[in-house]
Image (tube, rainbow, N blue to C red):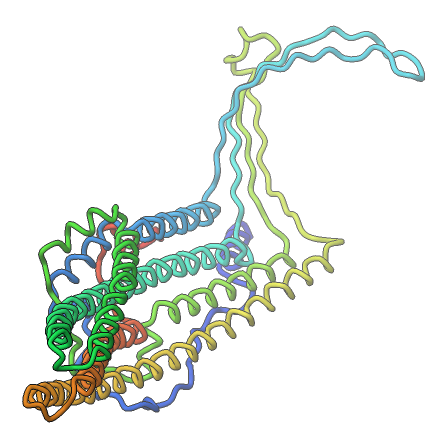
Length: 477
């Protein structure tokens, strides 16, 4: 009989009330709706290296080392790991030491009469108090499960920061280089138009051409010059955004770029893989799965509130009115025994709490399904954008080359006296517009490639120094 009770307690302690978490199995399409490359190769975790730009690689590396967002994410992961330790500690006995001195002077009278007078006394005490809760129905175990899932949420949040950071660095850098290309195009065009305007003015002064030609040439020159301030403003904005993402001052980022005229070039092919792979690749989808696990554990924890809790308590110490007698054997005192606490008139509150947690669990499931659907849409949109921008670049390259040939031909005809200069100006305006469109289309194609890499979930597998191992470290068992 004596052995039966401990065995029964152990058996009860192994019992966990409530639903055990089972990861959902999403139903996804077998292939993408938009045209995509077959999954013949894995998505490169360091996809930014596929753009062939060492400056971009340097910027991403700097951000992974010093980003304030990453450092904050690392602290949230450490916080979540500490919460696991707090919840897990309830599985072990707690022991507190106590030292006390209490002066007691009883009352000698009350409103209805008098008590016999008593002498005041002082009580000195020294000892230890111990308490150990037996987790009969899994209340502690479910709390630990929820804490572990919460740690998983924090880890996936940190990985999401890594993913977004690499994509934002690449996008802002690509746009900065695009604005620089447009500035170079404007400067070259201004020089060309300046020379042409000088020639037209000379011809107008000689009476060879009409003054209208000179006015139109001046207008085209001024219009082109007017594009520069906006481009410079946009370039500065991208530079400042890069500095903020890296976690440094704009002057430091500008120094990184100074004298380094590299250009990112989008790869021809980006392996999209299969839709099912998004479940394991996208940090935002992985996060919602961990949040669902946490909500499930909290639901089970709420269900344990229906059942009683059994604790073993013990106190061992010394008590004496005279401190000189405190350490005598006669001053020893102890008590030990079980303590069973269960709800009686709290059923409605407990049931409401279970209902709250169950509703939150269903919300977490819906959020997981929504995140997966949004991830699919992101990839579909990115696949279309990547393919269409590539086609646009190819078409505009043909158009820009044709416009250049048309300009050279119009210039030759004007020199031969077969066309007036207004025709040259019209062709020149079309050529400038085609070159500008091509420059912007190339930038759009690079940013579309970046968006596709981000949508596919690349970039979080790298061990960033700013996380300092916070993501890879495993919580204590």
